[in-house]
Length: 481
Image 1 (cartoon, rainbow, N blue to C red):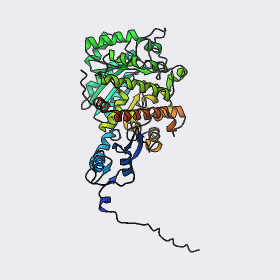
Image 2 (cartoon, rainbow, N blue to C red):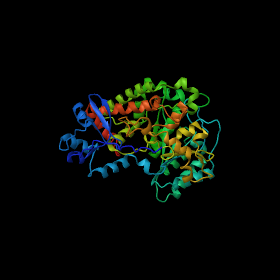
Image 3 (tube, rainbow, N blue to C red):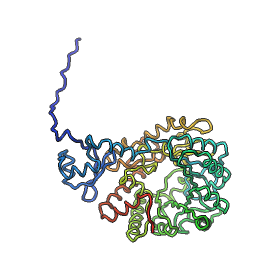
Image 4 (spheres, rainbow, N blue to C red):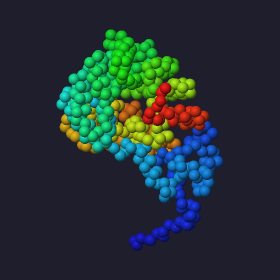
């Protein structure tokens, strides 16, 4: 049978006017916030609009000669032939993780620990120490990456229990570094710090971070020795000595459990007592060793949100009284929103920065794309072994690509007004939902991030003083006086 030729489709085409040809409105998302509309696009452009301004923008009835056009042009919501290059540059600056190699390299020098913290997510039933052969390969990976700025972070367990490998990594990282901006860091409970270790870390310019959950009673509730004794007095005695004798500031990191909720002021005041300018109010993930004790320490996203709001209100109140302290996650989010710069926080990358933003090396040489993945210790997330493969082979593993695909926010929450700045953790999503295709609206972390963005934008609208405080939070150098 002879096929019939179909008639071509006809369209009602018209020639656009000069006004319509001269610029384009970049596709945007919107969200009502207070009495305004937050509009944003994937390039990071955003602004608050009144109801009438939003009507004009949404109806594509924007007049190039109007003040609204000039404002939207400046805010990166409108493009023409003159600003397209700067808009692309802004996108690259906001998403530098898409154009660089792994910058954070975490060496788990031991899985042993001298404490038995109830909420420990990294607790391992197998006690393993990293030997010099594996440590040498870690350094090879560190200097194989093409990114100019790298950080080597030493973790555990308690890394001070494998002091020989710590010394080897620090000394040889400094010795063999030729052209990298190299940062060295160590995460410890600080209980095992002695004079010799303090001097070595200070002389080697190693940043030290210690867990401190708040006042002694709160800290000792979970961070205990095997005999049940709390670790607060031991840790703080060494922190005080290290700071006083060697002039080195120790970063403090609290873990928030359900028992923290009624003590947000006390937790913040404790950090101020230790002259901390930053505090990280991070929720506990229901992964690793924390799962066994989740009924005793865990909580819902909604419960954490109430705590976070109370804590942030108090932090802003302190700032308005002249006391500088900033919440770390809020500062990361504000850097992306206000400066359009990538702070390097893996879970706020899209796709997630697992593998690309950080990589974790275990004592036996096995490597994982992020801290959460190594805590789960599932072979599904293992990228291979650094004793057998080089960096380029590991970073191109299929399971890493599949992991990153499952974290692309364009698929899961593409119409969110917070889309330009947010991300998700595919490991936690998989571990809690048993699926690489996440139900993003059911993700506790996603609920928390959405609230945090909402809170920040609401506070920006609330008064100019909040905006001034936020601007100070994102400055590189801050006068704390």
